[in-house]
Length: 242
Image (cartoon, rainbow, N blue to C red; front, top):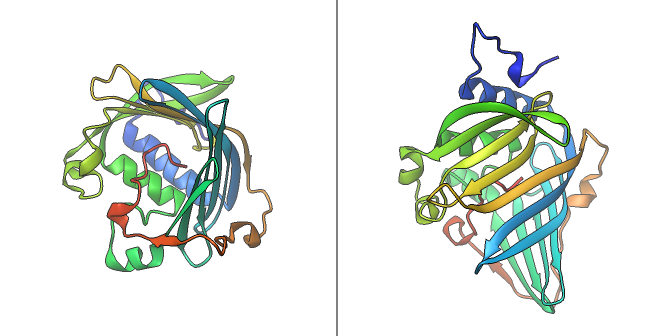
């Protein structure tokens, strides 16, 4: 059994070893599904979005999140389809906005961030723009997790797509399943590193379920204009994005 804590007292576990374990584990996954619960704060109000995420190698992705309460009705959909096109649909009450980004073009042009559609490479990218420290193992829902904390490094400062948002976020703490390397929780703090600004948890995880490619087809409604965007105009993915 491979565990993050497999490293003995004679050979202390390092953040680099955890990153390599996570990368290799995610690369072996053919598909995965999970429940997603995202909590953030907007204008001093806690906002909770819940939904699900499904992935299929090499790059297919579908994420549905929703917030429904007495005052708000918000739905978010993200799809990466077989043509490597990323679709985002935001619906607030009856208003709907749809954006489209051709990820294949960004791969060709060498864009550094939004083209990271392979989950293993995406996590490796985010962890590469942080100085990482391994923390003590913990438990989430009675499951062992290994923990690393990241601080933005010089590479992040020099990345044109990350630089505009670095002032919003401080350290990020990552919790990965000790047995499978899949993320269980990601917590991002403000610049003081005292207040949580965003947290996401993954639960009800199923590895390698059967799923048809048709699940990842997205066709925008005929009566809504689709906005084509470039990477800088796309909302910058945070470390929490699955």
